Image (tube, rainbow, N blue to C red; front, side):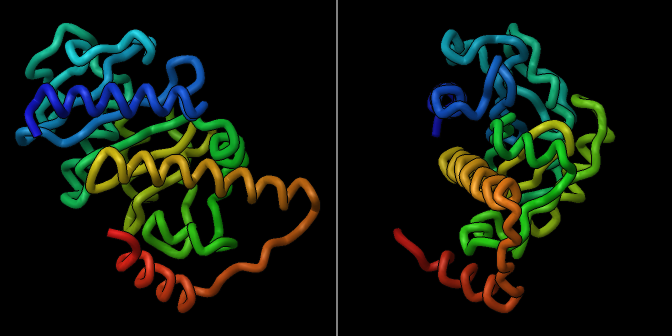
Length: 212
């Protein structure tokens, strides 16, 4: 993929995220690994108006390589994830309403449904709270992502990582769906039956062979 193609893919993902209601009021951000660094959405630019020239190129220390815009305020956790997780090729960060509501209770998502395995483990953690844009938040996110493809951020939102932008976006969408189901059960006063770790391991093995 050329740099122009990668920039276009980030814009398309960010705009899809907004259309799906996962990024209200310019919230969230999107990045992908590129040329030993990363490309990331800028701070404060409405997604509907964003174009390829707005995407900012950084090195893995967060130093701007090219671009006239200010990179996302959440650059610290993007760079930290890319430095620590060689399997992460793309990151989608949302403030999707239902998953964010759950994160504001500082709860994770237990394995009440087999699709939790899409995030790489038997449950999805909620990382400890830290102020947005800080190194403390980056460190909390990394801990929450250990062995996982997604983490809730307390009182904040969701991070999803993937081998492609499409994969990261798919995880982010599914987390929002699952969070909605979980909140509905809690609102009804119901306690979900949790799948055990052995079953979740079987599900993850099945998902690894699913589709193309």
